[in-house]
Length: 257
Ligand code: URA
Image 1 (cartoon, rainbow, N blue to C red):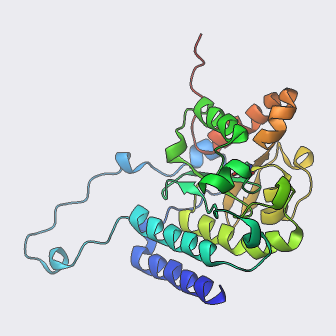
Image 2 (cartoon, rainbow, N blue to C red):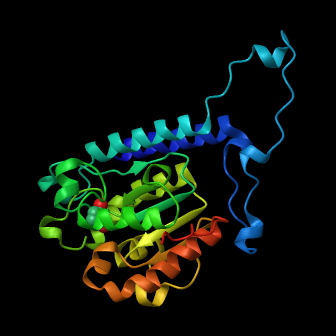
């Protein structure tokens, strides 16, 4: 696993070198988010056409950034499948590395796979996942344009919370995923990813503020499973999701009816 992660780091470094500045999305500066949003690619002027037969035109085109990221994310999924760094691999049916767009501007990080996720190998497909889908939809986004993953990639037995050493063993995978995607915002769902990524305790205290991971703004909110048990918390959770949208320079869509 050490070798796999080492290879992964080299892969990320190669991407950085190949992609140089323009392929890597710039991190948001700390200034007000809406004003700080980088220009959309659609708004950027088209590059002048290459002169036919010139030295530059003869060079092979760089693969698009999302293609490189997809390959790196696939390498992480393979490393997760081979991982034996903690006890969670012993009882899992399938590893659940994560899924979504390699070019996602928003990454959601949950706790760890439950029974449905363990059975399917996909994150957030059970009851909590259905609520997360509705939350994403309410934000005016599609599930396939964000990225969804967990603090641990294998199911803790009996749905217990992951232990600290399990979080530590899996953190390099999470951090590598975030480093590859470099979303504009990270949204942490519940106490477990908050502890793993930021070393903070308690969503109640951490929510309502903007945190930072490696220059990327981080918003913490309640886990969808908690919202299913405590519907009153949906209102503050919606405030958190609106803060995420503001950081993306977006507004929630008008509500039907
Ligand atoms: N809860 C999580 O935290 N993650 C999942 O993938 C599913 C349920």
